Amino acid sequence: MSDVVRNEKHVTARIPPVLRPEHPSARSLAGLVSEFGLETSGSLDGVEVTGVTLSTGDLHPGDLYVGIHGAHSHGASYASAAREGGAVAILTDPAGAEIAKDSGLPIVLVDSPREALGEISAWVYRSSEHPPLLFGTTGTNGKTSVSYLLEGILKQLGLVTGLSSTAERHIGDLTVVSRLTTPEASEMHALLARMRESNVRAVAVEVSAQALSRNRVDGIMFDVVGFTNLSHDHLDDYADMEEYFAAKLPLFQPDRAKRGVVSLDTSWGQRVVSDSHIPVTTISTTPGIDAEWVTTIIEEQATFTEFRLSGPENRSLTTRVPLIGWHMAANAALAIVMLVEAGFELEAIGQALEEKGGIDAYLPGRTERVSGEHGPSVYVDFGHSPDAFLNTLAAVKKFTPGRTIMVFGADGDRDATKRLEMGRVAADGSDILVITDHHPRFEDPASIRKTLLEGAHLAAHQPEIHEVSPPERAIRTAVSLAREGDSILWAGPGHQDYRDIAGVRTPYSARDEARAALREAGWA
Ligand SMILES: CC(=O)N[C@H]1[C@@H](OP(=O)(O)OP(=O)(O)OC[C@H]2O[C@@H](n3ccc(=O)[nH]c3=O)[C@H](O)[C@@H]2O)O[C@H](CO)[C@@H](O)[C@@H]1O[C@H](C)C(=O)N[C@@H](C)C(=O)N[C@H](CCC(=O)O)C(=O)O
Ligand SMILES: Nc1ncnc2c1ncn2[C@@H]1O[C@H](COP(=O)(O)OP(=O)(O)OP(=O)(O)O)[C@@H](O)[C@H]1O
Image (tube, rainbow, N blue to C red; front, side, top):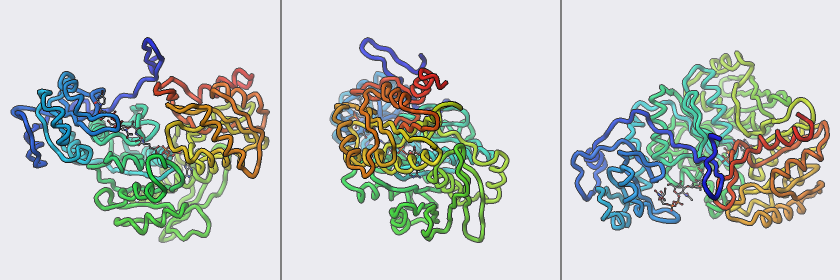
């Protein structure tokens, strides 16, 4: 029951905690104000700051509470609550200063608190002093995978590592489930400070487009950044693909990163190369694409993909990634070249990997096989875009002598324009399709399913189609239809431990549901 919070109305999954330094050092507020040349009101005498937060829900005594103009309210309206919780001052914009003027807290004024947050948090937490090696990965698909693979290889090279991803944050052996893909800047710098306490030497950070648009990695200089690919997603946040692409680009500029590695597997990669102002090297898995590093698939098995990575000066390495699909080899190769760009010798990487027969990494909910020796193979995956479906279905089909059954739904209150294409790609690549619900949030799940069905009917290939709600029933339907030799791909939920139903985080694990469905069907 430790991951579950009960209240009178609902059972909700616990919101994971923010990782902060255990022994923060106090910094004088007057020092901060003079360092950044800021205007203030109220007395700063003797005020010491030990942390920074954007949210009263995460507040610690000694915090500088930062009031941002949010989508629903102005953070400054919680200034009194922040003071009661032990905040020592508020940093906000002029509108926020007006709102917070009677809170009794000293006010530090900036034009844009979000834009100031990264540098100020870095100063408070001293996180940019002697930083670890920092790797940042962006792109539509593969960010989490590249980050876990980077972390795995760095561990094999003997380093104490850290990870910030959609699924989890890691500090050495400590694991905490994530909230956002990329945490807010105040949380990011707190995380880096905590990592320093644990002697972390290298950190893999997943950087979403939203993070770049919302200043979440400000105050960080990445040693190497990587670009995986760009395809249709997040067009609820961005007007079109051009705008979505433009949101990713700042990561490849000198104020954020020293070097970059860009995959040319989607044509957007070439655009990153042209528009970046840092030294970049290129990589490709696609035959015929002219890149400095080339990945060639050598062998594909149900438990691994073996590939050769060849680069400049006749350097090459052959290794295995413990995952299926060319895209996972592409992710692993990108991670290796990012390490080379950070100064690791390819030969040393090869030797370290050889000791375990390849890359040693566990990626929760990324084409994760949850079935046993007998019965259908069941994979739970985090794919929630047409391109992710395409690649994952192709990988699963390679190891499926029988029929491919796909179970999926779509996010409510997120990019609705991709739903038709998700339905079409899913239908094209499967023999049986079970359309179900994912996180409906505040949308009507039946209307989401209707659009997915319409998309499925647009496909050139028409599988047997079932519409089953909720997903607990859908996976049981899929298992009941499956035979030995068939595969079930359940795309969407991946590692997640809850479903968002009308704003309530209902505890839920697709991996556990799938295992239960198999057991009930006698396939345990
Ligand atoms: C849409 C969006 O960006 N929302 C972010 C925003 O919340 P908001 O604007 O709705 O905040 P609000 O409710 O108006 O409140 C204003 C401020 O008052 C604070 N507050 C509010 C209430 C209270 O009691 N006390 C309090 O302190 C809030 O923390 C906030 O700072 O500011 C919050 C920081 O305080 C963020 O956590 C929150 O991210 C939400 C959770 C979110 O879902 N963001 C999405 C868009 C996102 O970033 N997604 C990407 C996905 C990437 C991928 O899939 O590849 C990601 O990186 O995770
Ligand atoms: N290089 C790739 N190319 C295309 N699809 C991929 C690639 N890597 C992973 N995928 C697909 O995308 C899904 C999500 O992978 P991953 O979590 O690594 O991506 P992500 O960029 O972190 O996604 P998100 O932004 O949602 O966190 C996988 O489960 C798989 O279906």
